[in-house]
Every structure is written in C-alpha cells, then in structure tokens.
Image 1 (cartoon, rainbow, N blue to C red):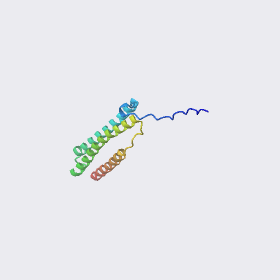
Image 2: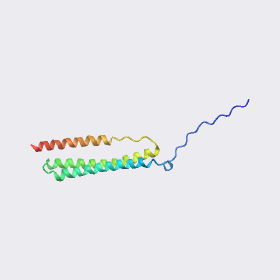
Image 3: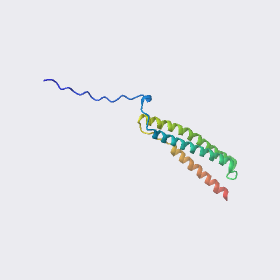
Length: 130
C-alpha cells in the first residue's frame, strides 16, 4: 500500500530587510510627524518661557534665582527637542517593522519638571507679592 503524500509544513515567510518592507500607511507617518512637531512647539515654548523669566520679570526674584529658572527651562527645551527626534525615529522604525510602538518616559519627566518649576514660580510670585 503506497504511503499518502504528506503536505510540506508551511514555512514562515522570511523577514524582509528594512529596505524592502512596505512603508506604513502615510496617515500614520503624518500623525507621527505632527506629534514630533507638537513636541518641538512645546520645546520652543519652554525656551521662550526661560527667556521671559530672565528678561521680562526683574521683580519676580533675585537675579541668580531667575537665571537658574531660565537655565532649567532652556535645558528642558534642549532635552525635549532631542527626545522628540529620537521618539519620532523610533516610532517610524516600529511602524515600518510592524512592531509595537515604543513607550517613552519623557512625558512623565517633562510633566514632573514643569509642575516643579510652576510650583517654584508660584512660590516666588506669592513671596514677592507681599
């Protein structure tokens, strides 16, 4: 009695190199770009806030305190700008690879830093208002 033919096991498709992968839907790429630009706008806002604290509020606090606040804002702006590009690139690569989108802690750090600086500014405004 002849043996029945066995079907060859299905072979998974080999992974394609990055250059050959199908690009993600353009709408997702554009949404990723809009998110990047929103982070850049936030970075520019932080930079403008630092300049404003230093140049436009001479009665807010002693000069060294204003300089420290302005530097914190400016460093935050620089870090956020760099993080924005890194995040954009990581999300774009994940979309092209069909992988889950990467998480980021930058938003938590940014939120905590802005809350801390806002609390300091509120304290200065209340302290110097009296």
